[in-house]
Length: 61
Image (cartoon, rainbow, N blue to C red; front, side, top):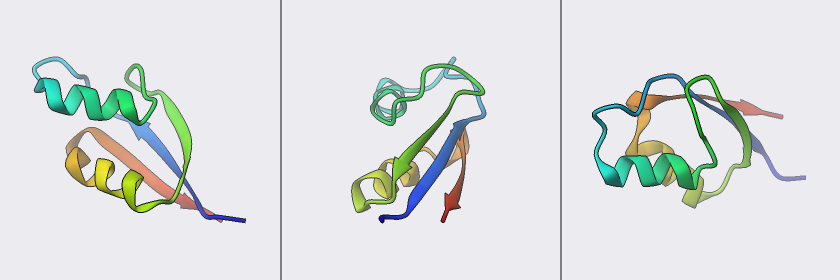
């Protein structure tokens, strides 16, 4: 079984650039406080690395 990441949007998207909004939407997050579980892939890690100031994430076993 592959590793999973729990990603939570912790800051508002007000005042955020359009590219960063698209990245958040691509991760499946919709509003502040929303959590999703995603597979730990290089693509997802890259998206998280692009907007770390908006997110909190943790590895699930």
